[in-house]
Image 1 (cartoon, rainbow, N blue to C red):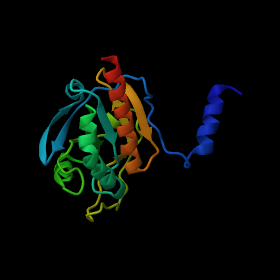
Image 2: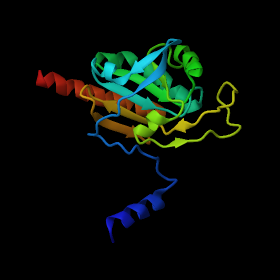
Image 3: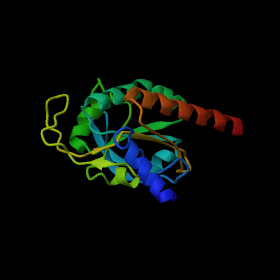
Image 4: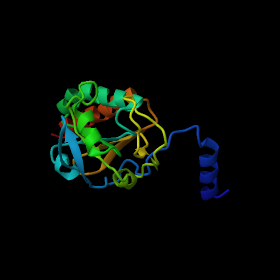
Length: 198
């Protein structure tokens, strides 16, 4: 049986039972990107290459602001933001939300709480460059505030990118809080490895 057929068969067999994972594996060079972003309610231009000069960056893609799992993930990242900073890492959330929605979400004390920026990928091009599945908006779907969600959504996937621009880890298929915990485990290990080198 050739490999192409085997891969197709396995994908078909597990379709619907396993989460979609990003195409870019660990070891790949992360696609550079710039995007409108918000931090504590204020809009600015986020540039990945600039943040990488400071150290590792945790780039986490999520379906939509003001939805159950995404609210929990943002809240958990905000709670652990100081732990990530202690290991020399920064965080950025990326979704297809408009910058106006993200300005509210980034400042909301229940969620991002001004602890890290969230970037607006309105056309899904950033998510797609990372190999992430982007789905169209579902008509009538509402957020936790009762507002209709009119934008598409990216599959929940987190990338830990080292300062040389290389993807160190890809985290998918976990519950929101577990996703955050795994990302922190990765950056903690990176910090330990860096300390050994110096």
